[in-house]
Image 1 (tube, rainbow, N blue to C red):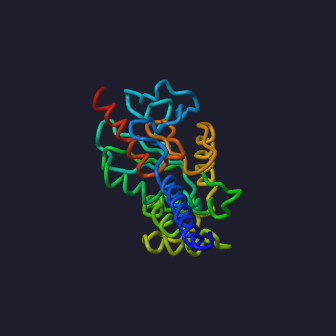
Image 2 (cartoon, rainbow, N blue to C red):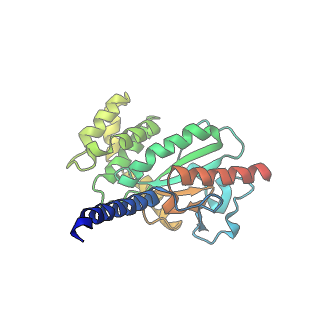
Image 3 (tube, helix red, strand yellow):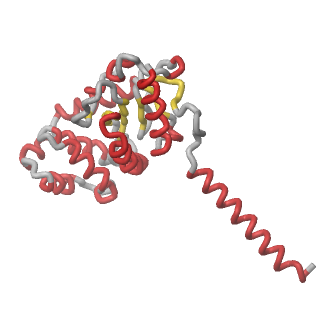
Length: 245
């Protein structure tokens, strides 16, 4: 028995390694198999969605959703793009992880996808999330919302845990050549507070409870597949439906 003990130990280690590898592979693989529907059975209105079919008149009107209520990427010229709405928090780590994947979606699909961002800062757990949303809106007032949006996500780790992130946000404003006096005023603006609150209320009314939450043509994407592969699949399904309608 002792003679075989080293071989048994090696066999045990190999089996354990295979088990770990299988677990990691499973975690890295989207839960939605090819051909399955990546959407939850609920629309952005919070109601059940019949077969999850998009509104034939276009996503801007589906279930009362007005994509213009959020921060919309410009230069979308096709008559009926897929509308991707994200409810996000600039300090949220999963939102930070989703950010480059959404940039890839934008690169791959161009004007076939219209990206809309809604603020949903989780202030109870992310102390700087509201301030970051203010920074984005302050930049919007100078026509640089998306540029600030990108800087906040790309550099999330640099400001997320600071006691006072304002100097960092001001440095981003300088990079974007913003008027700093106007930017500083807007960082504490009640008007911007109201806009952020309106986004939160809108999200809450549509059943949003956490971030990131993504809707495609007003259909809620399963959180488990809110990633590059899952979003591609959902977008492709909707584009095929639009092409066939």
